[in-house]
Length: 69
Image 1 (cartoon, rainbow, N blue to C red):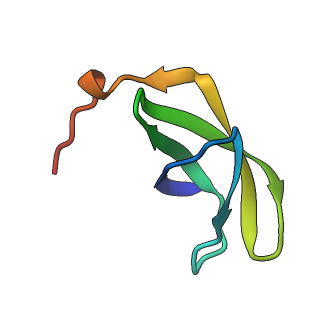
Image 2: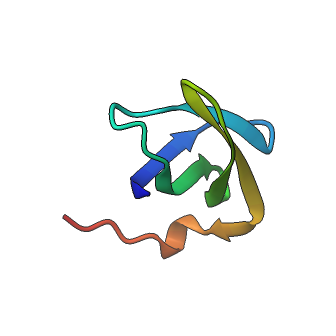
C-alpha cells in the first residue's frame, strides 16, 4: 500500500476509484465533502478499479487540515 488518494463529490457511501499505473492499493483514501475529509477504505478489488466505502463517522473537519510542502 502506498500514497494518498483524495476524491470529491460522492452522494453515496460506496464508490469506485481507478487503479493507478502501479495497480497498488492506496493507503489513504479520503473523500472531500462539505463537512471535511472523510476517510474511506477499499472493500473490493476489481481488474481496473477499487470499490471503496466512506466512513462518514470518521470525518476530519476542514479547520483541522494543515497543508505543507
